[in-house]
Structures are given as structure tokens and as C-alpha cells.
Length: 225
Image (cartoon, rainbow, N blue to C red):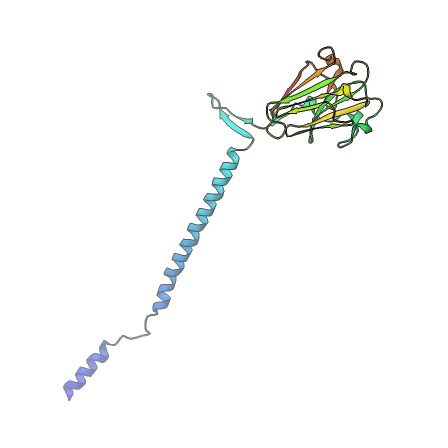
């Protein structure tokens, strides 16, 4: 029996002392690190996608950067706009959206050309030298639309890239042609015939300041803004 007691004491000595190890607790930090790593990877991917899209938007923006041989960097705008000389409605024709019937009596006889948010406009005030005016507007791209205002559209001829209107067919004191070139049009040629040949440029006025045209046909092109 003494041997048995020694045998039992030996097993008792082999039993671990203190609390049992907490396996769940030892695994928790590892789970947290794995989850945190996954979140970090997702965040990096999102940032990369956002930066990539931002880069694409920048490359298609309205400016580009060039570096000269000497190392000097210059930024060039790719945005195009119509010349400022043709911008804005002449004050004689009232505010935006007004028809020819709103034109003031002081408007001098002539052909008025201007561009604004609504497109291009060629309006004619009848008088000495403008009784038999015929206008043709041509663009480098197909026209979106063209309408006659202030009179009946008799004599209006349209093709995909140009429109012609014979103002001699109307007795209206003021009438006009409104043209929508669309977003992609970059040039417009406005030819004005006075009945016996090209109308004198002194009777062709451009923009809100009514700057006389220098040529007939009047050629307008979009320029870097």
C-alpha cells in the first residue's frame, strides 16, 4: 500500500498549478489583427479608385501642363469660347428672350450678329441699304436648329450644316434668325448679301457693343479661353 500512495502522489504532482489557460482570449488578438488588416486593405483600394478617377477627370479637364527645355512649366487652357467681340445682345433689342417687337425705334438699320447662352442670332433692322438682305449661316458641324422670329419663315432654307433666310420677303421693321450650333460647333461663317452683292461691312454689327464687322462673310471661330 505504501507504493500505491507514492504512485498517487506522483500523479498529483504532475497536475498543473494555477488557472487553466484561456484559449479564447489568446485567439482574440489574432482575430482582431486579421479583421483590422482586411479593413485597411479595403480602405487602400477605395482610396486608389478615387485617386484614379480624379486623375482621369483632371486629364480631361480644360487645361494641360507643358515643360519647356529650360525647365519652365506653363499651363495651357484647352477650353474654347467664342470671341468676346460677338458676345451679348445689343441693348436696342431689350433683354434676353425678348422678341423683335421689343426692339427700340432707335435701332439703326443694319444686320446685328451676336452670341449668347441661347446660341447665335442674326437680326435685321430694315432701312437704307438693308431692304433686300439675304443671310446665310454655315457651321463646321451640323446645326441643331434654326428659327425665324418677328416674321413668317417664308424663304427659310435649311441643310444639315447651314441655313439661309431671305429677309427681303418680309415687311417687318425688325426680324431675325436664331441659330443653335450645338455644343461641338467651333466655327461659323455668316454671309450677308445686300441684293446686288455682299452688304457693306459698315452695316454689319457684332456683339453687344455693335462693333462693325471687318469682313463679309464674317468668320467667327472659338478661341482658347
